[in-house]
Image (cartoon, rainbow over all chains, first blue to last red; front, side, top):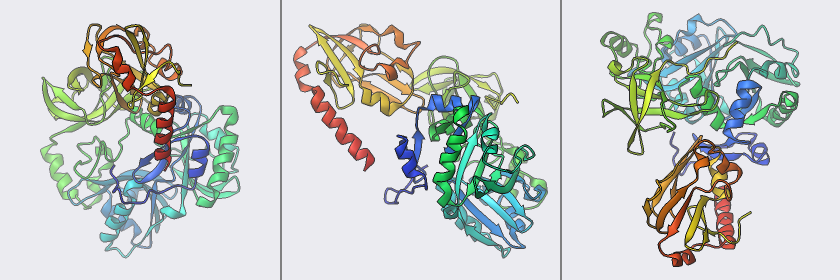
Length: 369
Length: 132
Protein backbone atom coordinates (compact mmCIF):
# COMPACT_ATOMS: atom_id res chain seq x y z
CA UNK A 1 0.00 0.00 0.00
CA UNK A 2 1.40 3.38 -0.88
CA UNK A 3 0.74 6.65 0.82
CA UNK A 4 1.51 10.08 -0.53
CA UNK A 5 4.50 11.47 1.34
CA UNK A 6 2.62 14.68 1.99
CA UNK A 7 -0.29 12.98 3.76
CA UNK A 8 -0.25 13.39 7.51
CA UNK A 9 0.18 10.07 9.25
CA UNK A 10 -2.89 8.99 11.19
CA UNK A 11 -2.90 7.59 14.70
CA UNK A 12 -5.33 5.37 16.55
CA UNK A 13 -6.49 6.25 20.04
CA UNK A 14 -3.99 3.69 21.36
CA UNK A 15 -0.87 5.21 19.79
CA UNK A 16 0.62 6.29 23.13
CA UNK A 17 -0.12 2.87 24.62
CA UNK A 18 1.81 1.14 21.82
CA UNK A 19 4.76 3.46 22.27
CA UNK A 20 4.71 2.94 26.04
CA UNK A 21 4.82 -0.80 25.44
CA UNK A 22 7.91 -0.29 23.30
CA UNK A 23 6.31 -1.40 20.05
CA UNK A 24 8.24 -1.04 16.84
CA UNK A 25 6.01 1.28 14.79
CA UNK A 26 5.43 1.30 11.05
CA UNK A 27 3.47 3.34 8.50
CA UNK A 28 0.72 1.05 7.26
CA UNK A 29 -1.74 2.50 4.78
CA UNK A 30 -1.10 5.97 6.16
CA UNK A 31 -1.44 4.87 9.79
CA UNK A 32 1.26 4.79 12.47
CA UNK A 33 0.76 1.23 13.69
CA UNK A 34 2.58 -1.30 15.87
CA UNK A 35 4.56 -3.80 13.79
CA UNK A 36 5.62 -5.88 16.78
CA UNK A 37 6.01 -5.70 20.54
CA UNK A 38 7.80 -8.80 21.89
CA UNK A 39 8.53 -10.20 18.40
CA UNK A 40 6.53 -11.65 15.54
CA UNK A 41 7.37 -15.28 16.42
CA UNK A 42 6.24 -15.06 20.05
CA UNK A 43 3.15 -13.04 19.14
CA UNK A 44 2.21 -15.52 16.43
CA UNK A 45 2.61 -18.42 18.84
CA UNK A 46 0.51 -16.67 21.48
CA UNK A 47 -2.42 -16.39 19.06
CA UNK A 48 -2.15 -20.00 17.88
CA UNK A 49 -1.87 -21.47 21.37
CA UNK A 50 -3.36 -18.91 23.80
CA UNK A 51 -4.47 -15.41 22.90
CA UNK A 52 -3.35 -12.14 21.37
CA UNK A 53 -4.76 -8.61 21.47
CA UNK A 54 -4.57 -6.43 18.36
CA UNK A 55 -5.40 -2.75 17.95
CA UNK A 56 -7.17 -2.73 14.61
CA UNK A 57 -8.68 0.72 15.01
CA UNK A 58 -7.06 1.75 11.73
CA UNK A 59 -9.69 -0.32 9.92
CA UNK A 60 -12.38 1.83 8.33
CA UNK A 61 -16.12 1.70 8.94
CA UNK A 62 -18.80 2.75 6.50
CA UNK A 63 -22.42 2.81 7.61
CA UNK A 64 -25.19 2.46 5.07
CA UNK A 65 -28.72 3.28 6.24
CA UNK A 66 -32.22 3.70 4.92
CA UNK A 67 -34.76 1.75 2.86
CA UNK A 68 -32.26 1.65 -0.05
CA UNK A 69 -29.38 0.36 2.09
CA UNK A 70 -29.55 -3.27 0.99
CA UNK A 71 -29.96 -2.35 -2.68
CA UNK A 72 -26.82 -0.18 -2.51
CA UNK A 73 -24.78 -2.84 -0.70
CA UNK A 74 -25.96 -5.43 -3.23
CA UNK A 75 -25.03 -3.17 -6.14
CA UNK A 76 -21.45 -2.44 -5.05
CA UNK A 77 -20.47 -5.83 -3.57
CA UNK A 78 -20.15 -9.28 -5.14
CA UNK A 79 -21.44 -11.52 -2.33
CA UNK A 80 -25.18 -11.82 -1.64
CA UNK A 81 -25.99 -9.53 1.28
CA UNK A 82 -29.69 -10.44 0.95
CA UNK A 83 -28.79 -13.80 2.50
CA UNK A 84 -27.70 -12.14 5.74
CA UNK A 85 -29.88 -12.27 8.83
CA UNK A 86 -29.72 -9.50 11.43
CA UNK A 87 -26.62 -10.13 13.52
CA UNK A 88 -24.67 -11.83 10.75
CA UNK A 89 -21.45 -10.76 8.98
CA UNK A 90 -20.26 -11.63 5.50
CA UNK A 91 -16.89 -11.47 3.73
CA UNK A 92 -17.25 -9.81 0.35
CA UNK A 93 -15.62 -7.61 -2.28
CA UNK A 94 -16.29 -4.00 -3.21
CA UNK A 95 -16.28 -4.13 -7.00
CA UNK A 96 -15.27 -1.88 -9.85
CA UNK A 97 -17.35 -1.95 -13.04
CA UNK A 98 -14.59 -4.21 -14.41
CA UNK A 99 -15.30 -6.87 -11.78
CA UNK A 100 -12.09 -6.16 -9.89
CA UNK A 101 -11.56 -5.26 -6.24
CA UNK A 102 -11.84 -1.72 -4.92
CA UNK A 103 -11.42 -3.41 -1.54
CA UNK A 104 -12.36 -6.51 0.43
CA UNK A 105 -14.56 -6.06 3.47
CA UNK A 106 -16.96 -7.44 6.04
CA UNK A 107 -20.64 -6.47 5.77
CA UNK A 108 -22.54 -6.62 9.08
CA UNK A 109 -26.33 -6.58 8.94
CA UNK A 110 -27.49 -4.50 11.92
CA UNK A 111 -31.11 -4.23 10.70
CA UNK A 112 -33.07 -4.39 7.44
CA UNK A 113 -32.17 -0.75 6.88
CA UNK A 114 -28.70 -0.54 8.48
CA UNK A 115 -25.41 -2.16 7.41
CA UNK A 116 -21.93 -1.66 8.88
CA UNK A 117 -19.07 -2.20 6.41
CA UNK A 118 -15.62 -2.84 7.86
CA UNK A 119 -13.00 -1.92 5.23
CA UNK A 120 -9.22 -1.68 4.94
CA UNK A 121 -7.48 1.27 6.58
CA UNK A 122 -5.72 2.59 3.50
CA UNK A 123 -8.83 2.27 1.33
CA UNK A 124 -11.50 3.80 3.51
CA UNK A 125 -11.70 7.22 1.87
CA UNK A 126 -11.64 5.71 -1.63
CA UNK A 127 -14.25 3.13 -0.63
CA UNK A 128 -16.50 5.85 0.75
CA UNK A 129 -16.29 7.91 -2.48
CA UNK A 130 -16.88 4.79 -4.54
CA UNK A 131 -19.97 3.74 -2.61
CA UNK A 132 -21.35 7.30 -2.61
CA UNK A 133 -20.79 7.63 -6.37
CA UNK A 134 -22.93 4.54 -6.98
CA UNK A 135 -25.65 5.50 -4.54
CA UNK A 136 -28.71 5.79 -6.77
CA UNK A 137 -30.77 4.08 -4.09
CA UNK A 138 -31.18 7.10 -1.83
CA UNK A 139 -29.31 5.35 0.99
CA UNK A 140 -27.49 7.35 3.64
CA UNK A 141 -23.76 6.59 3.54
CA UNK A 142 -21.47 7.65 6.36
CA UNK A 143 -17.67 7.43 6.59
CA UNK A 144 -17.83 6.41 10.25
CA UNK A 145 -14.19 5.47 10.93
CA UNK A 146 -13.56 8.26 13.43
CA UNK A 147 -16.50 7.06 15.56
CA UNK A 148 -14.99 3.62 16.12
CA UNK A 149 -12.05 1.96 17.73
CA UNK A 150 -11.66 -1.74 17.11
CA UNK A 151 -9.82 -4.39 19.10
CA UNK A 152 -9.33 -7.99 18.04
CA UNK A 153 -8.95 -10.68 20.71
CA UNK A 154 -7.82 -13.80 18.90
CA UNK A 155 -6.80 -17.30 19.86
CA UNK A 156 -8.15 -20.43 21.55
CA UNK A 157 -8.46 -18.57 24.89
CA UNK A 158 -10.04 -15.42 23.39
CA UNK A 159 -13.59 -16.37 24.31
CA UNK A 160 -12.93 -17.01 27.99
CA UNK A 161 -10.88 -13.81 28.26
CA UNK A 162 -13.56 -11.61 26.70
CA UNK A 163 -16.27 -13.43 28.70
CA UNK A 164 -14.67 -12.19 31.93
CA UNK A 165 -15.54 -8.63 30.92
CA UNK A 166 -19.06 -9.02 29.56
CA UNK A 167 -22.47 -10.31 30.69
CA UNK A 168 -23.23 -11.15 27.03
CA UNK A 169 -23.10 -14.91 26.61
CA UNK A 170 -20.43 -15.35 23.94
CA UNK A 171 -20.92 -19.04 23.23
CA UNK A 172 -24.15 -18.55 21.22
CA UNK A 173 -22.47 -15.97 18.93
CA UNK A 174 -21.48 -18.18 16.04
CA UNK A 175 -18.55 -17.60 13.67
CA UNK A 176 -19.30 -14.60 11.43
CA UNK A 177 -22.14 -13.42 13.66
CA UNK A 178 -22.27 -10.54 16.11
CA UNK A 179 -24.24 -9.08 19.00
CA UNK A 180 -24.48 -5.70 20.71
CA UNK A 181 -23.63 -5.66 24.38
CA UNK A 182 -21.66 -4.19 27.23
CA UNK A 183 -17.98 -5.06 27.63
CA UNK A 184 -16.33 -3.65 30.75
CA UNK A 185 -19.16 -1.11 31.01
CA UNK A 186 -18.74 0.03 27.39
CA UNK A 187 -21.31 -0.44 24.63
CA UNK A 188 -19.78 -2.61 21.92
CA UNK A 189 -20.55 -4.46 18.75
CA UNK A 190 -19.11 -7.90 19.51
CA UNK A 191 -18.34 -9.88 16.35
CA UNK A 192 -16.98 -13.41 16.20
CA UNK A 193 -14.66 -12.62 13.32
CA UNK A 194 -10.94 -12.28 12.78
CA UNK A 195 -8.00 -12.34 10.44
CA UNK A 196 -5.83 -14.96 12.10
CA UNK A 197 -7.36 -18.37 11.38
CA UNK A 198 -8.19 -18.76 15.08
CA UNK A 199 -11.39 -18.39 17.04
CA UNK A 200 -11.78 -14.89 18.37
CA UNK A 201 -13.68 -11.66 18.51
CA UNK A 202 -13.48 -8.19 17.05
CA UNK A 203 -15.15 -5.50 19.17
CA UNK A 204 -16.17 -2.07 17.89
CA UNK A 205 -16.73 0.83 20.30
CA UNK A 206 -16.30 4.57 20.78
CA UNK A 207 -12.60 5.58 20.69
CA UNK A 208 -12.76 7.32 24.07
CA UNK A 209 -12.84 3.89 25.78
CA UNK A 210 -9.83 2.51 23.89
CA UNK A 211 -7.25 2.61 26.69
CA UNK A 212 -9.69 1.26 29.27
CA UNK A 213 -10.68 -1.71 27.10
CA UNK A 214 -7.11 -2.40 26.00
CA UNK A 215 -5.84 -2.40 29.58
CA UNK A 216 -8.67 -4.45 30.99
CA UNK A 217 -8.51 -7.03 28.19
CA UNK A 218 -4.78 -7.37 28.79
CA UNK A 219 -5.49 -7.82 32.48
CA UNK A 220 -8.32 -10.31 31.87
CA UNK A 221 -5.93 -12.27 29.67
CA UNK A 222 -2.98 -12.17 32.02
CA UNK A 223 -3.51 -15.68 33.42
CA UNK A 224 -3.79 -16.93 29.82
CA UNK A 225 -0.54 -15.13 29.00
CA UNK A 226 -2.18 -12.97 26.36
CA UNK A 227 0.28 -10.88 24.33
CA UNK A 228 -0.19 -7.57 22.56
CA UNK A 229 0.23 -8.32 18.86
CA UNK A 230 1.20 -6.12 15.94
CA UNK A 231 0.75 -6.07 12.20
CA UNK A 232 3.73 -8.39 11.70
CA UNK A 233 2.02 -11.30 13.43
CA UNK A 234 -1.31 -10.31 11.90
CA UNK A 235 0.30 -10.84 8.49
CA UNK A 236 1.97 -14.18 9.25
CA UNK A 237 -1.23 -15.44 10.91
CA UNK A 238 -3.50 -14.47 8.01
CA UNK A 239 -1.07 -15.91 5.47
CA UNK A 240 -0.92 -19.28 7.29
CA UNK A 241 -4.73 -19.19 7.25
CA UNK A 242 -4.65 -18.55 3.48
CA UNK A 243 -6.46 -15.21 3.69
CA UNK A 244 -6.01 -12.47 1.11
CA UNK A 245 -4.51 -9.06 1.86
CA UNK A 246 -5.59 -6.10 -0.25
CA UNK A 247 -2.67 -4.70 -2.24
CA UNK A 248 -1.04 -8.14 -2.30
CA UNK A 249 -3.36 -10.96 -3.42
CA UNK A 250 -6.15 -8.66 -4.58
CA UNK A 251 -6.39 -5.16 -6.02
CA UNK A 252 -8.21 -3.30 -8.75
CA UNK A 253 -6.65 -5.54 -11.41
CA UNK A 254 -7.73 -8.89 -9.93
CA UNK A 255 -11.14 -10.57 -10.05
CA UNK A 256 -12.68 -12.93 -7.50
CA UNK A 257 -12.29 -15.86 -9.92
CA UNK A 258 -8.56 -15.24 -10.24
CA UNK A 259 -8.10 -14.84 -6.49
CA UNK A 260 -9.82 -18.12 -5.59
CA UNK A 261 -12.68 -16.10 -4.13
CA UNK A 262 -15.40 -17.53 -6.35
CA UNK A 263 -17.28 -18.43 -3.15
CA UNK A 264 -17.97 -14.73 -2.50
CA UNK A 265 -19.02 -14.01 -6.11
CA UNK A 266 -22.77 -14.63 -6.41
CA UNK A 267 -23.82 -14.03 -9.99
CA UNK A 268 -27.26 -15.48 -9.24
CA UNK A 269 -28.16 -12.59 -6.92
CA UNK A 270 -28.86 -10.27 -9.86
CA UNK A 271 -26.79 -7.59 -11.57
CA UNK A 272 -24.14 -5.72 -9.59
CA UNK A 273 -21.07 -3.65 -10.45
CA UNK A 274 -18.89 -5.74 -12.73
CA UNK A 275 -21.24 -8.72 -12.79
CA UNK A 276 -21.36 -8.73 -16.62
CA UNK A 277 -17.56 -8.93 -16.82
CA UNK A 278 -17.47 -11.58 -14.09
CA UNK A 279 -20.12 -13.66 -15.87
CA UNK A 280 -18.08 -13.55 -19.08
CA UNK A 281 -14.87 -14.46 -17.24
CA UNK A 282 -16.63 -17.37 -15.59
CA UNK A 283 -17.42 -18.69 -19.09
CA UNK A 284 -14.09 -17.92 -20.75
CA UNK A 285 -11.91 -18.87 -17.78
CA UNK A 286 -9.09 -16.93 -16.12
CA UNK A 287 -5.54 -16.27 -17.31
CA UNK A 288 -4.01 -16.63 -13.87
CA UNK A 289 -4.90 -18.26 -10.59
CA UNK A 290 -3.86 -17.58 -7.02
CA UNK A 291 -2.13 -20.58 -5.46
CA UNK A 292 -0.37 -21.42 -2.23
CA UNK A 293 3.21 -22.69 -2.26
CA UNK A 294 5.76 -23.94 0.21
CA UNK A 295 9.50 -23.64 -0.24
CA UNK A 296 11.46 -26.88 -0.48
CA UNK A 297 14.68 -25.50 1.00
CA UNK A 298 15.40 -22.88 3.65
CA UNK A 299 15.06 -19.88 1.37
CA UNK A 300 12.04 -17.57 1.62
CA UNK A 301 10.01 -16.58 -1.45
CA UNK A 302 8.86 -13.06 -0.61
CA UNK A 303 6.37 -10.52 -1.95
CA UNK A 304 7.16 -9.55 -5.52
CA UNK A 305 9.66 -12.34 -6.25
CA UNK A 306 9.25 -13.93 -9.73
CA UNK A 307 7.71 -17.39 -10.06
CA UNK A 308 9.56 -19.58 -12.55
CA UNK A 309 7.84 -22.42 -14.36
CA UNK A 310 10.01 -24.51 -16.64
CA UNK A 311 12.72 -21.90 -16.05
CA UNK A 312 10.66 -18.98 -17.32
CA UNK A 313 9.04 -16.20 -15.30
CA UNK A 314 5.30 -16.82 -15.35
CA UNK A 315 4.02 -15.13 -12.24
CA UNK A 316 4.81 -13.24 -9.06
CA UNK A 317 4.67 -13.96 -5.36
CA UNK A 318 1.94 -11.84 -3.76
CA UNK A 319 2.87 -12.60 -0.13
CA UNK A 320 5.60 -14.83 1.23
CA UNK A 321 7.18 -15.33 4.64
CA UNK A 322 8.15 -17.92 7.21
CA UNK A 323 5.09 -19.68 8.67
CA UNK A 324 6.03 -19.61 12.35
CA UNK A 325 3.54 -22.23 13.51
CA UNK A 326 3.96 -24.61 10.56
CA UNK A 327 7.74 -24.16 10.65
CA UNK A 328 8.15 -23.83 6.91
CA UNK A 329 8.33 -21.01 4.41
CA UNK A 330 5.09 -20.35 2.58
CA UNK A 331 3.53 -17.91 0.18
CA UNK A 332 0.85 -17.17 -2.33
CA UNK A 333 1.41 -16.38 -6.00
CA UNK A 334 -0.39 -15.94 -9.29
CA UNK A 335 0.45 -18.60 -11.87
CA UNK A 336 -1.08 -19.64 -15.21
CA UNK A 337 -4.04 -22.02 -14.64
CA UNK A 338 -2.23 -24.83 -16.45
CA UNK A 339 0.52 -24.67 -13.83
CA UNK A 340 -1.73 -24.30 -10.79
CA UNK A 341 -2.34 -27.95 -9.84
CA UNK A 342 -1.55 -28.99 -6.28
CA UNK A 343 1.74 -30.83 -5.99
CA UNK A 344 3.27 -29.12 -9.04
CA UNK A 345 6.90 -28.13 -8.56
CA UNK A 346 7.79 -24.55 -9.37
CA UNK A 347 10.70 -22.27 -8.60
CA UNK A 348 10.85 -18.90 -6.91
CA UNK A 349 13.58 -16.54 -8.02
CA UNK A 350 15.29 -15.51 -4.77
CA UNK A 351 17.89 -12.80 -5.45
CA UNK A 352 18.26 -14.11 -9.02
CA UNK A 353 18.68 -17.74 -7.95
CA UNK A 354 16.01 -20.35 -8.56
CA UNK A 355 14.75 -21.88 -5.30
CA UNK A 356 12.50 -24.96 -5.49
CA UNK A 357 8.91 -24.78 -4.24
CA UNK A 358 5.74 -26.84 -4.46
CA UNK A 359 2.16 -25.77 -5.01
CA UNK A 360 -0.02 -26.81 -2.06
CA UNK A 361 -3.69 -26.52 -1.14
CA UNK A 362 -4.96 -23.48 0.74
CA UNK A 363 -5.28 -22.81 3.59
CA UNK A 364 -1.87 -23.81 4.89
CA UNK A 365 -3.25 -23.91 8.42
CA UNK A 366 -6.65 -24.90 9.68
CA UNK A 367 -7.43 -24.71 13.39
CA UNK A 368 -8.01 -28.12 14.97
CA UNK A 369 -11.31 -27.24 16.69
CA UNK B 1 26.72 -2.92 24.94
CA UNK B 2 29.04 -2.07 22.01
CA UNK B 3 32.51 -3.55 22.62
CA UNK B 4 35.17 -0.87 22.52
CA UNK B 5 37.69 -3.13 20.76
CA UNK B 6 35.32 -3.58 17.76
CA UNK B 7 34.94 -1.24 14.78
CA UNK B 8 31.59 -0.49 13.15
CA UNK B 9 30.10 0.42 9.77
CA UNK B 10 27.21 2.70 8.80
CA UNK B 11 25.44 -0.45 7.55
CA UNK B 12 25.58 -1.87 11.09
CA UNK B 13 28.26 -4.51 10.76
CA UNK B 14 31.00 -4.91 13.36
CA UNK B 15 34.52 -6.25 12.98
CA UNK B 16 36.95 -7.42 15.60
CA UNK B 17 40.56 -7.87 14.46
CA UNK B 18 43.20 -10.16 15.87
CA UNK B 19 46.39 -9.87 13.87
CA UNK B 20 45.54 -10.34 10.21
CA UNK B 21 42.15 -11.99 10.93
CA UNK B 22 38.89 -10.10 11.28
CA UNK B 23 35.67 -11.53 12.76
CA UNK B 24 32.51 -9.93 11.35
CA UNK B 25 28.92 -9.77 12.56
CA UNK B 26 25.91 -7.47 12.67
CA UNK B 27 25.27 -5.10 15.53
CA UNK B 28 22.71 -5.27 18.28
CA UNK B 29 21.01 -2.26 16.68
CA UNK B 30 20.74 -4.18 13.39
CA UNK B 31 19.24 -7.29 14.98
CA UNK B 32 16.72 -5.21 16.92
CA UNK B 33 15.69 -3.38 13.74
CA UNK B 34 15.27 -6.69 11.89
CA UNK B 35 13.32 -8.57 14.54
CA UNK B 36 13.29 -12.37 14.78
CA UNK B 37 16.05 -13.66 12.48
CA UNK B 38 15.06 -16.84 10.63
CA UNK B 39 17.63 -17.31 7.86
CA UNK B 40 21.23 -16.40 7.12
CA UNK B 41 23.00 -16.74 3.79
CA UNK B 42 26.80 -16.51 4.00
CA UNK B 43 29.60 -16.55 1.41
CA UNK B 44 31.68 -19.64 0.77
CA UNK B 45 35.06 -20.09 2.43
CA UNK B 46 37.64 -18.79 -0.03
CA UNK B 47 35.43 -16.00 -1.36
CA UNK B 48 37.33 -12.76 -1.89
CA UNK B 49 35.59 -9.56 -0.76
CA UNK B 50 36.18 -5.90 -1.31
CA UNK B 51 35.25 -3.41 1.41
CA UNK B 52 31.60 -2.42 0.98
CA UNK B 53 30.76 -5.45 -1.14
CA UNK B 54 27.56 -7.36 -0.34
CA UNK B 55 28.47 -10.81 0.92
CA UNK B 56 25.25 -12.30 2.19
CA UNK B 57 21.86 -11.72 3.73
CA UNK B 58 20.23 -11.92 7.12
CA UNK B 59 16.48 -12.44 6.95
CA UNK B 60 13.93 -11.88 9.68
CA UNK B 61 10.28 -12.88 9.54
CA UNK B 62 9.52 -9.50 8.02
CA UNK B 63 12.58 -8.33 6.11
CA UNK B 64 15.70 -9.14 4.13
CA UNK B 65 18.89 -7.30 5.02
CA UNK B 66 22.07 -7.41 2.97
CA UNK B 67 25.38 -7.66 4.79
CA UNK B 68 28.30 -5.65 3.48
CA UNK B 69 31.91 -6.51 4.10
CA UNK B 70 33.50 -3.88 6.37
CA UNK B 71 36.94 -4.54 4.83
CA UNK B 72 38.67 -6.30 1.95
CA UNK B 73 39.94 -9.83 2.33
CA UNK B 74 39.30 -13.53 1.97
CA UNK B 75 36.68 -15.54 3.87
CA UNK B 76 38.47 -18.21 5.92
CA UNK B 77 35.58 -19.43 8.10
CA UNK B 78 31.78 -19.08 8.35
CA UNK B 79 29.81 -19.64 11.54
CA UNK B 80 28.40 -23.17 11.28
CA UNK B 81 25.91 -22.67 14.12
CA UNK B 82 23.80 -20.09 12.27
CA UNK B 83 22.33 -22.46 9.71
CA UNK B 84 20.33 -24.34 12.35
CA UNK B 85 20.07 -21.55 14.90
CA UNK B 86 19.85 -18.18 13.11
CA UNK B 87 17.99 -16.81 16.16
CA UNK B 88 21.38 -16.61 17.90
CA UNK B 89 21.78 -13.35 15.98
CA UNK B 90 19.02 -11.90 18.14
CA UNK B 91 20.37 -13.25 21.42
CA UNK B 92 24.12 -12.76 21.02
CA UNK B 93 24.87 -10.57 17.98
CA UNK B 94 28.27 -9.39 19.23
CA UNK B 95 29.49 -12.82 20.36
CA UNK B 96 28.34 -16.34 19.47
CA UNK B 97 26.49 -15.14 16.37
CA UNK B 98 29.51 -13.86 14.45
CA UNK B 99 28.99 -14.43 10.72
CA UNK B 100 32.40 -14.88 9.05
CA UNK B 101 36.12 -14.64 9.69
CA UNK B 102 38.28 -13.02 7.06
CA UNK B 103 41.97 -12.73 6.35
CA UNK B 104 42.44 -9.01 5.91
CA UNK B 105 43.93 -7.79 2.64
CA UNK B 106 44.82 -4.41 4.10
CA UNK B 107 44.57 -4.02 7.90
CA UNK B 108 44.91 -0.24 7.52
CA UNK B 109 41.32 -0.15 6.17
CA UNK B 110 40.16 -0.63 9.76
CA UNK B 111 41.08 2.95 10.60
CA UNK B 112 38.30 4.14 8.26
CA UNK B 113 35.61 2.51 10.40
CA UNK B 114 33.77 3.92 13.42
CA UNK B 115 34.82 3.22 16.98
CA UNK B 116 32.18 2.23 19.55
CA UNK B 117 31.50 5.78 20.78
CA UNK B 118 31.11 7.16 17.26
CA UNK B 119 28.83 4.29 16.29
CA UNK B 120 26.66 4.78 19.36
CA UNK B 121 26.28 8.46 18.54
CA UNK B 122 25.42 7.46 14.96
CA UNK B 123 22.62 5.06 15.99
CA UNK B 124 21.29 7.50 18.57
CA UNK B 125 20.88 10.00 15.72
CA UNK B 126 19.12 7.28 13.64
CA UNK B 127 16.73 6.59 16.50
CA UNK B 128 15.90 10.29 16.75
CA UNK B 129 15.14 10.46 13.00
CA UNK B 130 12.98 7.36 13.38
CA UNK B 131 10.83 8.73 16.16
CA UNK B 132 10.53 12.20 14.59
